[in-house]
Image (cartoon, rainbow, N blue to C red; front, top):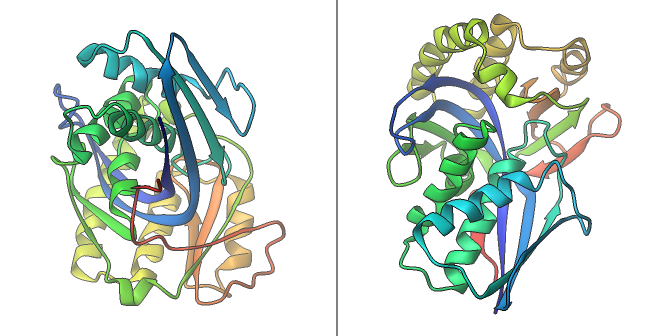
Length: 291
């Protein structure tokens, strides 16, 4: 049995952390952008035992943990004995740099296994497994529901798919836009979202900015608010600041990916003077089974 799942990458522009004892109701509100490069997960399940996970063709001890966590959560609900599971993640964007790759690994895994084994789970229920995996690993709060939704997505209510609420900026405003990004390294998500000082700054800013975007849901406004958030929370590195200065006059606006040492911008043109940039389009469809 084989199948493939494509999960687009997701960059958060700004957010607010919402705690809850119920992991399905815990998450973040805010806004982000979904791109047409992400993670392709190919799964094969046969009779036997064991789990084999590769990332870009190699075993990656550090980054397989979120995939292992998703499988562990599935095992809590369903008997997977007598099944050999092979998972190959092909990653088209930098890992650990604010592109939502951990959520993509978990989503591709949970949705793919659910399909192949015909588990009694809806698409949203399968995605909820990925959300719980993200929370348990402290690797993200809102990427899963963003990657399910696609587009420039506003997370109006926190929580997992099927519980949280999202809306998208109209696709006719986004379908011709390019996303320009460049990463300068990693930021460990848990170091920020578990830090009480950063958490207070994030929540003070995030709630008000979301309401401003709801009132004026345009791509340029999203970028303006994202930059305001990055500046006022003090999360921006010198490298990102320098790249923003390069991009601000040739795009609709630029900011920092939350949470990664990464700059991103929306542009009407794919051309940029930023060296070694990643150029993508906006993905308006979200996570999907390819075959």
